[in-house]
Image (tube, rainbow, N blue to C red; front, side):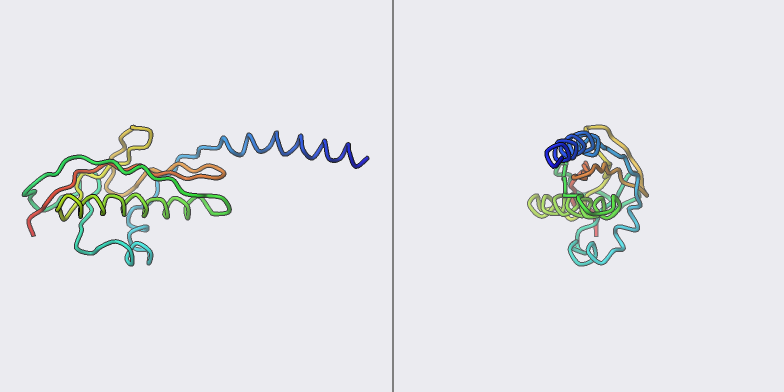
Length: 147
């Protein structure tokens, strides 16, 4: 009896785990809501500016090129929104590090770039969430803008 129960339990776990791991839910989430969170305000350098999509920005004095940040995070036990916000912060911190390394002060024309598919928006970013991982990819131009 115990052996049969163990076999049934193992089979159930295998069947349901493959379905759960294959989930890849696309979300379009608010940039503004994320940027207003305490984590973003605490961790992003206020001297570096981020401009999404076609947002107007000051004149570009120098371009350092296009850069991509592709980040993943553990989504297990988190809501999709919480995991997506956390991984967006990670992607933006990566772009921020690139700005500092290149000597710029902003990233302009930031687009979602998940699996190399460009989605441009001034208000939303794309995130994909599964049972155990969430991912955000951003592409933007690192620049020196007029102050």
